[in-house]
Length: 638
Figure (tube, rainbow, N blue to C red):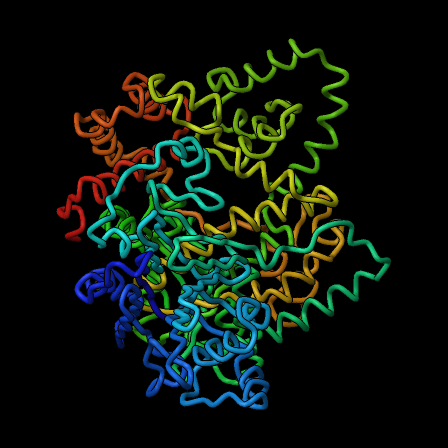
C-alpha cells in the first residue's frame, strides 16, 4: 500500500525537478510513512510513499526491470502475484524482490498494455517506459484504489490524492462550477470529473497512456457483465458457488507479511468476512468497531455479539458530537473533496483505532451494490410495478395535487410525508430520475436546486443526473440488474474512495474481498429475483452465511452505517453552521440564494422539514472551499 505521484513534461523541453516531486510527495506521507522513493529521467519524474506490507525489507519503490528501462510506482495489492511470478519466470524474467510490484513490471514487459488483464486485486500504478518514451497508468476494475491526474498541453501530473497535484506550482485549486448540481444531488461526481476544475480521475477499469507529443489515450479494459442471466440453475447452485468464491477471495486477501484485522460493523457483510477469516486462520482475529453514545445510532452491541460468537480480540471506539465536528475539516482535507456521507468520520476513528494493533484490515464493502442489499432496490421494484397502473388510471393534474399534498409536511407530519414521498404517490412516475435518483440519492432534487442556485450561474451548470443517466442508459437486463450496474459504476466508486482515503488517513490498508472481480462477475450473473425478493435483498449471501453466524445477525434488518447527525443538527450546533453559511465569506462566492438558505434553516429549526442532508452537503462544500480555495490552515489545527 502506497501513495504515488509524478510528472511528465511533454516535448522533452523541461526537466522535472526533484524539489517539485518532493513537495507533491510530502502531501501524501500518511499513505506511506515507512519509506519514500524517487526516479528522475529528464522530463519524467516518479515518486512514492510506502506502507510496507509485502517483502517489508526489499520492497522499496520505484522498482525497475532487469535493464533499468521500465520503472513503476504502485499502490495496491495483487493477490495472484505468486502464480504470475511462476509464469513470468518460466518465460525468462528475473526477479530481485518478493514483491507484487515487480510482477507488474515483468507483466508489462511481456504483455504491454494488456498486462492489466492478468491482475487480480486492487491497484493504481504508473509505469515509465523509457525505451518507448511512454507513460502508462492503470486503475483496478472496481475503483478500489484511486488515481487522479491533471492534463494540459504542457504536462501530465498524476497522484493518489488530489492534494499532491495541488502542490505542483502550475496547478491552482478552482471550483469546477459546471458539476455543482451533481455535487448537490449526490455529494460526489461520477465518471472522470472531480470538484476541482482541470483535475480528473481515471475511472475504474481504465488505462491511460501518453507520450512526449502530449497525445492522451484513455481506454476501458473491463466492465461488469450485463444482460439476462436466467439459466435455469437452482438457487442452491448460486448460494454454494458464491460462498465458495467468497471464501477463496477472503483467503487471497489474507496475503500479508504484517498483522491483519477486520472492521466489524455488526451487519452481515463484515461479520461474514470476519467469520471466514476466523475459519481460514484458525486463530482469533482482531476486530474493530465504532459507535456513539446515542444507542439508537450505534451497532456496537451487534458487533459485540459477532465478536463473542467468533471469539475474536475485539476493540471498539465511541465518537462524541464534539469529536465528530472537530475532525470534519481535517477529514475533508484527507478526502480532497467534501464528504459525501457522515459515515466517513466514524470510519476514520475506527481506522485510527485499528492502526494501534494491525497494519491491514478487511472490510465488508461491496456486497450491497453487487447483491441488492439496499432497501431502495425492492422499494423501486414496487414503485415501478404499481406506478405504471397508477399513472394510467389517475389524471396528471390529480397526481400533481397528491404530490404537492405529500410534500406539505404541515398537513401530514414529517414522518408520513417522508415515507409517502418515497412511494410512487410522491414521485413523478414518468421520470426515472424522479423515481430513483431524486427519491433515494439526492440531498437537493432538481426542483430544490432551482430554488437554491443563483440564476446568473445557470449557463455554467450541467444537469445533475447527466452522467449517472448515461450509465443507466448503458445498462441491460432486468430492473434489479440495471440498478446494480448503475450503482457499481457510480455510488460504489465513491464508497471505495471513502474507504481508501479514511483508512489511509490513519496509515492503514483496507481490503475489500467482496470486490474481487471474479466474485463480482459471478454475482452479476445471478438472476435478479434471487438477489431481491419482496422487501428483502442479498438473499444469496444470507443463505450462504447460515452456519457461520448467529441467525439474529443474518436476519436482522439492514440499518446501515448511520450517525446521530440528524439529532445533533437540531441542537446548538445548528446556529454556528447557519452563521457560517450566511456570513459574507460564504455569500461572496455567489452560488446560493441567501433567502433560500435562511428558509432552509428556519424550517429545520422548527422541525417543519428535516434538512439534515442539505445542511450536510452545504457545510461540507463551504469547508472544502475554505480549506482548498482560501487555504485557511486554521481549520486544520485540530
